[in-house]
Image 1 (tube, rainbow, N blue to C red):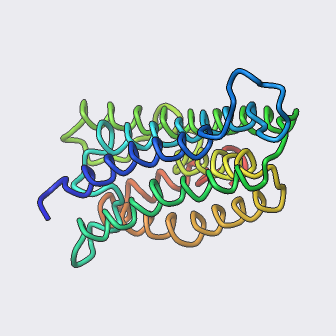
Image 2 (cartoon, rainbow, N blue to C red):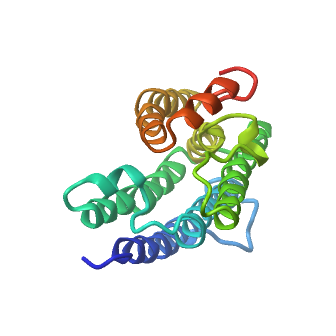
Length: 230
């Protein structure tokens, strides 16, 4: 596969999955008769808004911010990075959103106060991820020759502040999809495990090998994941 092919495949999959999700969510809804309890239209609209933001955010990141050959840095070290990246991306950003869509239809919850709270948490987490990635990208463009770790913007609060955004947004998205607390809690536990024991150790090894003493100095002076806590 050629360079960037995996991103093209994933991008097409994102658009197609958004279309299918809209069909599944709204094809059986009578928009005019909004008082029908069996369809819970307000919940579906909110969920689709969250799903659209989720997909649009990732589309923006892989095509305009993270301009690597593959979308996941760790995959670049595998034997067939583009193939693996395409498969991983299709699962995470095409198949998983369709699973969430069917869960939303299955649980068919009514919109309530908690949905709005989790929607705000979702927006906060998504904003942290997007803004931090954009700030780092702009800094790298202006400082191509500097062999340093970016420590400005939101990254001054935590070395992996972009991961913190994911910890907020992903469990919130699962709650909005299902309305079930324990599913959201499982998503939170998985996110914490994935970042604390997989992504952060792997990223620390990469940063240590590349930046050496500057990484040690930076990591010593800043929290890793959660601002002011850890």
